[in-house]
Amino acid sequence: MTRIVGRFAHPTALNAARRARDLAWLADDPEIDVLVVGGGITGAGIALDAASRGLRTVLVERADLAHGTSRWSSKLVHGGLRYLASGQLAIAHESAAERHLLMTRIAPHLTRPLAQVLPLYAPGHVARGAYIGVGYALGDGLRRVVGTPDAVLSHPAAIDRDTVLRLTPAVRSELLRGGVRGWDGQLFDDARLVIAVARTAAGFGARVLTRVEAVRVHGGGAVLRDALTGTEVTVRARAVLNAGGVWAGELQSDVHLRPSRGTHLVVETSRLGGADAALTVPVAGSRSRFVFTVPAPHGRTYIGLTDVPADGPLPDVPQATDSEIDMLLDTVNTVLADALRRSDVVGTFAGLRPLLTAGHEQDTETSDLSRRHAILESADGVLTVVGGKLTTYRRMAQDGVDAAIARRFARGEAPASRTASLPLVGAWPRARSAEISAAPRLVRRYGAEAPFVAALADGPAAARGVTAQELRWGVLVEGALTADDLLDRRTRLGLVAEDRAASMEAAEAALDS
Image (cartoon, rainbow, N blue to C red):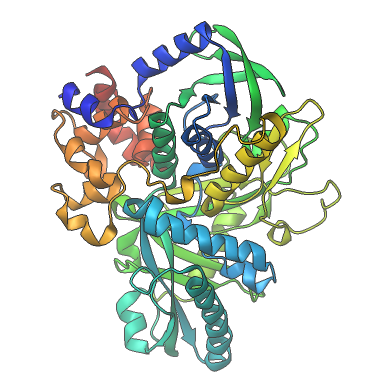
C-alpha cells in the first residue's frame, strides 16, 4: 500500500522520511533563494508562490503546520461584507476576489457555499431587515464584479417565517416574522487548507520542514535548529520572509502588532436542530458585529466570534475566557427556543489575529483596526508579511514574493506569480464530486485523493467515524509526526477532550504502523 501512496502523492507527500532527506540536502547545499519562517497559511502560501516560480525555497516551522492562528479561524472564506460596511473598499474587493479563486479554481474540494440566516423578530423587523438587506445586496454586487457565478454563491434574499424555521430549526418562533438569507464561502477545515498549500509547494520542490526553528535570522539567511535532534545548520538565502503571524515580532522587534483574540465554542449540532446553515445573530448595542453558528465536521457546530485585545505574553494555544463564553452564549440565546447552557459547550478554541498597528494605536478597539496586510523590511533586510486574513492568504503571499524579487533578484530573473490559476492537491470541481469513487465524507476532506486514502490498510479507528486510513494518510502524506499532529490538526478531534482521549490509541497505532 505504501507503493500506491508514493506513486500518487509523489512529489507532494510530506512525512518523516522526506523531512530527513530534506534536512540532509540542506546541510549539504545551504545556498537557497527563499527562506520562509512560519508554517501557517501565510508561510505555506509564500512557499508555494516562490517554489512555483522556480525559486529554491525552504519553509521552516518550529512546531507543526497550522500550529498557530491558522487552525483557529472561523473556517469561513469571507467576501468582504464587513469591510464594505466600514468603507474599506479595497480590502472588500480583494476578499471577494480571493474567495472567488478559492471556491472556483484553487480549492473547490475544500470549500462550499454556506447559507447565512438572520431571523427577524418583531418589533423592529422591517427596519432591521432593510438594513441587513442593503448590506447583503452590496456584498452580492461585489460577488458579481469579481465574477463568482450564481451556481457557486446564490443571491441574498428575504425569506419567510417557515423557511427560517426549516433552515434553522432551533430558533424561537414567537414574534418571528421572517428573515434574510445571505451566502458566503465555508472551508471544510482551515488546517487542511494549510496542509494542502504546503504539500502543493512541496510538489514544486519546496522543502517544508516542521520542528525546525530559526534561532537567528537576518536578511541573508538564518541559523536553523532541528528541534528533534538539536542539530544546527547555517543557511544562506537571497531573501528571507518572516511569516510568523502574531509571533512575527519575536523575530523582528520593529514589527508592531496588536493581537486580537477570536473565541469560538463547540457544541453538538443536534442542539441546534441539526442545522446545516449558519445562524447569524446581532450583538447587542452594535450595528456591525454578529455572533454566528457554523456547521462543522464530526456532528459539531462552532459558535463565534469575539474580537477583544489579547494583551500580555502570547501563548502557543490561546484560551477562551469565561466572559467570552458567556457573551457568545448570551448573544446566540436571544434567538433560540431552548437556550444553550454551559454544559452544552463540549469544547472551545481561540485564535490570535495579527493586527498591524503603527505603534500608536494601542487605545483603538481591535475590531476597528484594519485587516489590510503589509510587507515590512527590517534594517537587516528581513521581509515580514503581516496582517491580512485567511481568505486573502494567496494575495499576501504573492505580494511578499514580489517584494523579495524586487529587492533581491535581477529584473526578469523570476517569473510572475502563477498561484491565481494553480489548483491545490486534491482539487476537483465541486459539481462533479460524485464522480470520485469514495465515501462522501472522504471526498469532502480529500477531494480527488479520497480513493487513495480509502485504499490504505485498515487498523484501529478513532472517534466520530475517523478511520484508520485517514490517520495513516496523515502520517504518510500530510507530514504528521506526533499523535497531537493527527488529533489537533489533521482530524481536529482534539477540539473536544473526550474525542481526544478516545482517539489517542488509534493515533499512536497509525504512527507505529
